[in-house]
Image (cartoon, rainbow, N blue to C red; front, side, top):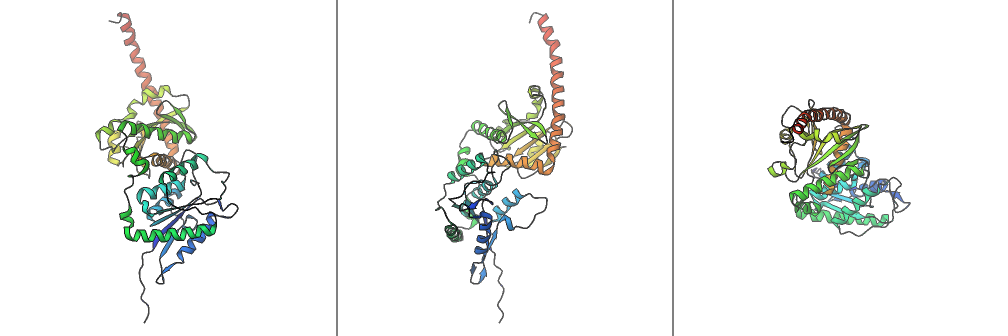
Length: 390
């Protein structure tokens, strides 16, 4: 009798690590090692049936142009039942030292959504590459230290292979009892996110603005005043004004921290230096955001409203008002990630050139309003002086 085929849902495993670093020192690259690990894991069977499906970015098929490599990796993290992190102390690729690396983002995404599926294996005996970003890597190491994972380090390939075998076996047996969904602890109930949630609205708003400013400055921006950073966008300088909603925008008190900041642009632009355009308003939101909330903030519905991965981007082509709402800015890492994704989206979508053009026109509008108000106030001041100030 012919054997019946059995539909078996495979356990999805993702292996995350830097690609080009040699392990151990002067050994094979982690890309080569990951490929062998993938083949080794997928060769394992349960009662003669294939049990595992491994995803590594080197062997993944190409994606459509509607999704970039960063989002593709994070999508795979969310789909994975088990994430194996080969931690050589490198945060992964990042555009600049002000951003978090892709390995950092992968670990953060998995840990926030389902920490029980994460296994971190420390690697010792590797040398940094010349193109590594020191601050990005330091930030990644600090994040791993806060998680404080329990795992013996691997110093050789043999030790690494044994550690991966044990990590997969431990994850499978643990998750059989818990279930990946039940193991999820709700994205922001641990670590820095929990610490931020304990802050008052004012303290949290200050922390959110400071984190965004630090990320932009470390990426090459110039801090101006207490809540502004001049950033190069599409070859021009654009002033970014930073704001924070310390709770959901559905909470009236949180909305008060934001208001409609673009209504005061004419007070700010006269203080800009020459060649600085804008502003572009960036609003960090502790919770999620909706298109309806964005329209309410703008004050009228006729505007360009798009919903990229970081949140919502709004542009008014009449008054040249533009702002971005960054969702789920719950801690330092998620806030920096949102800033990184905003800047990446601007470039990938081609919106950066339009942002610069709107910023140029917005400054002209705001400066004109400021000049008109100043001129209208002068006759009143002269009349007041002539009357002896009475």
